[in-house]
Image (cartoon, rainbow, N blue to C red; front, side, top):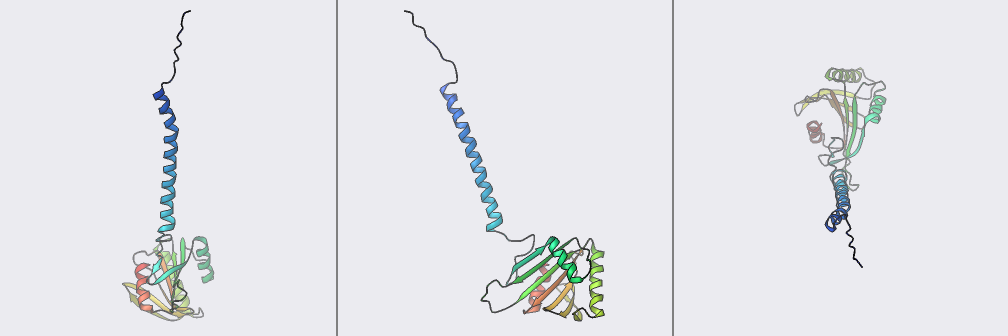
Length: 195
């Protein structure tokens, strides 16, 4: 009887090992990519949220406790003025002590309105000043002062001392500060520097 040899052709053992390693390597790369994404996302959003939309989280010893922005802030600004204020953007920030056992009730509210351009901001500033001078707005004792190189207007009003100005480095903005129960000069100087 004659012996017939059958030779099987197909992938060699070494090529089979390579093919088995490919799915494993692909899965390993996917897992590493996913874990990297989670790590960086967690680090950016949880571990180090230094600013909220470019807003400082601290103002001296005070911490940011509220940040209203976008349509909500624009609506509040319009409601406050009782008229349609034409602004592109607005932020309403509140700083206070988060520690409930802190013995100082200092609070700073910052209203930031960004107009279409510097002339629109100057017009808004003029309308606010004229309204205060006319009377009946709840604000009185309008004074001009200079703080940190900025020309500031100060008025007495409900909830503390009120300061408003157009920053020289961003003339399309109008800033209104309300400082309650604090050493105004220190907080005001810091706020003018920051905003």
